[in-house]
Length: 452
Image (cartoon, rainbow, N blue to C red):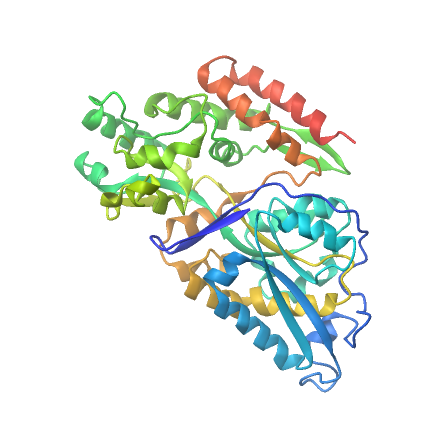
C-alpha cells in the first residue's frame, strides 16, 4: 500500500496491494516478553505496574516499524506516542525504524524468520496472508484495551479480522468519492452536489445537455474495469464478493443484490461515460485535467493529481474548480460504501514484547493520539467517533460507509488474475450479460479462494 497526503482537501488516502505471507505460529499477544523485564500482560502494562505510576523495573527495547509516510507526514505524533509510552516505561527504549513500500514485505519476511520487530505497519490488504499463516499475534481478548475499538471504521476493522478473530489495530484510512468540476456544474445550472443516484443521473443529463456537443465529453468518466467503484454498487445494493465459513469461501456475485447493483452501474455508465469500457482508471486524473470530464470516481489524493502542474499531467488552472462528494446511494442518508484503503498496525506472533507493543499502539492510535493525528495531518482516522474532526470532508463521509475485500488467504490471486476486471469489461462492452459474467466470475473466485 502506498499513502499520499493531499493538502488540497486536507486528507490522506492510502491504497494497498496484497502482501506476502509468513509461516510463524501464533502465540498470542499477551505472552510474557523474554530477554527483557516487562509486564506479562498489556493490562498490567497500562497501569504502570502495581504502584500505578511509572514502571522503572521494566527495561529493554521496543522495535516499531512504520512506513516513511509517518516520518514525512506526522513525526510529531510518532514522538508523542513515544513520550506517552516512556512516561509509563522510562527505561524502555522505543526504536522506530522507517520502512518503504517497495521492500518492506521482503524485509519483514526475513525478520519474521529471525528476530521480528514488535510493531509493524502493513497496508490493509497486506494483512490477510500474515493473519492466515499464523504470523500475527491474536488480539481478540485484548480488543477492548484499545481506546476506540468499539467504533473502528468497518473497512479497516474487517481488514484485521480473520475467522472471527482480531489480529491488528486499524491505523488510518483512505476513501473514494466523486471528484467534480464545480464550474461545469454551475454552468449547467446545478446548484448543489447530488445526494441520491437519481439526482446524480439528472445532473449528468444536465451536463450532457450543456456540453454534449463535445464528442469527447463525459459527464461521469467511468472506465469499465473500475472494480473498486463497481463493488461499491454491489455492496451498496446488499451484495458482496464472497463470504467465508469455516475456511470455505462462497462467491456471491450471482446474487440478486449484486446483480441489481451492477445493473444500476451499467445503466449509469452507458448514459454518462465516454471512458473506455474495457479500460481501467489509471489515466482518469490526466483525462479530467484535459477539460473534457465533469466527474470521476477516485481517491482523495486524486484531487491533487488533477490540479497538479502540467509537467505532472495535471492542470493547475483547475485548483479552485474541483471539489468532491460521496458516491450517492439510493437513499440521501446513505451513500454507497467506499472501498477503504489504509494501514493497520500488527504485532508479530513471535514478538517478545507484545504487552509493550499493545501499549505503544494504543498511545499512537488511541483517542488522544488519533485526535492529534487527525488535527495535524488531516488523515481519515481509524474510528467513526473522530470523523467529525474533518468537518464536511466528503471523503470522511464516504469512509463512514465502507467495504473491504474478502479476508481469504488466496484473495491476492483473484486480484492478480484480474477476475473482477475481466467480468466488468465483459459486462460493460456487452460481450456477456450480467448473469453470465457474474456466473463465470463466481466460478473462478470459488476455485481460487478454495484452492489449498
